[in-house]
Structure formats: structure tokens, C-alpha cells
Image (cartoon, rainbow, N blue to C red; front, side):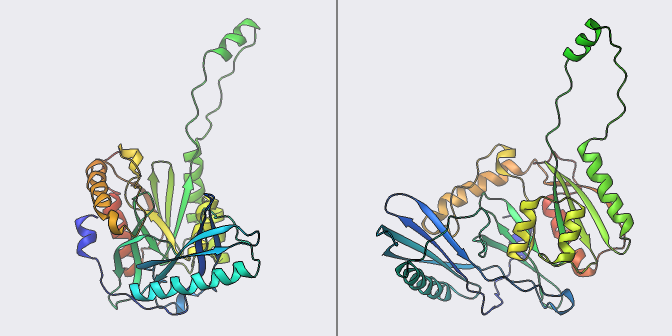
Length: 342
């Protein structure tokens, strides 16, 4: 974790009751790992009445036991519980969920395969919390599964736009065939690149919505767009409409809607700066030394790279709270530094 993130790390947790879900991991003795996910939808909350973003659980614990499925197969269960308040609460949640899954299996219920973005809180290390002048939680910085720092916030909309890999330049074969068959090759009209098309799409959106602030960044594989000044909580029709207009990545849209937060990677992907992905899952526990060694090497390798490059700013300025979070984003992602992107 960078020094600025460490200095702003908040120790206080905001208790949020009624957020325990029903998700568990189970590992059968014959070697499969499957997940069952059932997490009640969170009703959209209007920005005007939202006191703070939903906290990300800081505490995690497991409960282990055995059970049998409807076909009599023995299952070794390892079930996660989580809490925003304490490790003891997380352990109680895990124990209750172990009881629940045993009951469901005894009733003949079938567990469904794991999905890429399951409907449960993200099991990620909390590195820092960003709070407003009144103490309201504005954003949380976490470390994702492969080790990069990620900004989580619902304060403003964040769109992730993927761009295709650059196409290869045409070879000489086409020109040779044209000469052989006597056809004259007409000069081709300038065709906009996918990046140009995406930037034009963002510009059209900004022109059509002068009430919104639009900040555009280049990433290693696409664009990132921050939209401020709007009532666009994740998972709502309004936000989905904006993400659709900008042609944001559909998987990213699902992630945001599921977890009720927008996400923006702040530090480089490890493999883009000559390092391997983090292989230790949070909480690290007895493997904390291994995780610390990985992190030290990662920070060394990623020091020569930026994550985004700011391209343009349009519309009205952000609010003070929005500006506070954007300043953190720009500083850690090194948005104004002349560095290669990773």
C-alpha cells in the first residue's frame, strides 16, 4: 500500500445490520469446488436520501463441517462469513450459514456452480476509507484478487470502456493481387479507430448532458469515464442507461449492479509491469508473509507505470466530495504523469 493510502487508513467501521447473505463454499471429497449464491437484491437508494455508501466487510471467518448431498456424496464444507463490525460477528455468520447449508442439503436442495461475479460481498482487503468532512463514507480502497488497488464508490458514475486490440497493418498481398488482375487500388478513406469512435461517443454524451461533469481517461486497454453531478447510483435504470450510451463493458456493469458500487483500478495489473498476480487470497492469515513479499515486489515493479492518463474534462466542476475522491483516484493512478500505462 502506498504511503498516502496508509496515512489515511481509517480504523473505524460503520455497523450495517441486516446485510448478512447466504453464500457458501463447499468442496466435495471427489475434488470439485462449487459455490451457491443467494443474496437478496438491494433496493435502489436515491442519492438524496443515501447517508453513505454501503460498507465493504473488513472481517472474514470460516466454518468447516461435513454433509451429504441428495445423491449421498460426502461433502467437506468450508463456508465464509463476513462482518463490517468484528471478527467475532463474522465467525457467528459463518457458523449460521454452515447450519443453513446443511439444512438445505438435507432437504434435497442442489447447489449451483460458482459464477465469475457472485452475489456476495467482495472478499478483499480494505486498505483505506475516504470520508467526507462530516464523516460520511465516500469511497473504500481495496486490494483485488490479483493484487491491484481498487477504488470502490457510488458517489459518482464510473464507466469502463474496453477497446479492441489494434488491427495488423495490411500486408502487400492485396496490392500484388490488384496489380496482377489489372485493378487499380483506390486510396481508402480515413477510417476512425475504435479509440476515436469511443472518444467521439463520450463527447456526444457530454454535449447532450451539459448538466453533468465528464472526465475521460485512457487506460492500457480502453477508456475510463467519470460522470459527476448526477443521481446515478449503480444498478438503477438511470445509471444503466448512461453506461449503455457509453458502451461500457457489460461484465463491469453486472459487477457494479451486483455490489452496488462502481470500481476503478488504481494501480497497474501485475503482469503488465513484469510481475505475477497475487496468489494468496484474503484474509492472508498464516500466508501474510508471502503476501507482504509479493506486495513489496509489486510496488517496486509498478513504480515505473501509471494506470490511467487524463484526456479531457467537460461540464460543470464536481462537488467538493466528488473532487476529494477524484483527487485520490488521480494521485494513486498517476493520471497526470508521463508514464507508460499498465
